[in-house]
Length: 342
Image 1 (tube, rainbow, N blue to C red):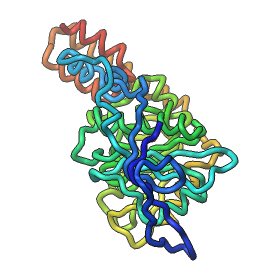
Image 2 (cartoon, rainbow, N blue to C red; image 1 turned 135 degrees about the vertical axis):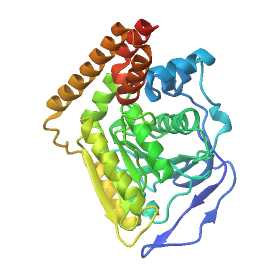
Image 3 (cartoon, one colour; image 1 turned 30 degrees about the vertical axis):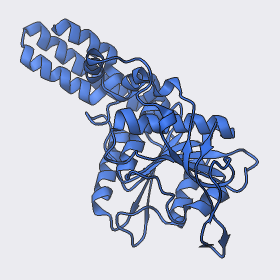
């Protein structure tokens, strides 16, 4: 069930946004912008144990698990609030969903996005108190997953049309979410923020999830043409995605813009690309996976030789490097070699 605090309906004429009409408290989840919505459902996908499995590398997850309980949820959903925008009309094919991660404490619907959401039939949701100062793994990520699961059920959202996005620091988190939860999100809209994957900050998920991400997820980078820092980060992030066999990647710029949320036209193009059902070409996926597997096997063999030689300092460093680069893709090997090193 959704419980809504304040509902704002927007009216449009000639592409202009008129002043909002404020409705009463506890309004039902009708079309419009609800600024203080509470949810009452949780999902096993956002549990602490599942976050450890998907979001952390094997060594880090084990360290966290030894310092506290991994049972239950990392937060109490009934005390959280969300901003939700519901389009005026439900499209014949059903709603799509964009879960947005903001960089600030409040989720605000960016200017010009509401008409695009209406045109495409896309529900927009973002958690409040989920900005850059909030914990990523045990707050920003589970809030996004919980929001997706709630709205998919409540609005009958097509599971193949669920996406995660964000702006600036929120876009960095959106990439982490898309990589860890390809069974929930089918793509990511990264507006002026990104990081490389296969690092200590963004470890690879288990093999089944990584393969699903490679096969069915779409990543769309959208950055202002004057936003030079994120443009450089975007190139590094894209290169890392391709290294780990993620080929359905698109990039676009919006003109005369620095570090800003996309304008209406750029957002419309991005959303249209994410919603496009046409399958991307993934030529070379098998070969790419084989190269990564060969590199992983070589790293494991090198580490095994260091352990056998008795060079424990070098072996520990090699184990850390393996954990950082391959994450849960190498989980079985890391667990076995860690035990062997001890």
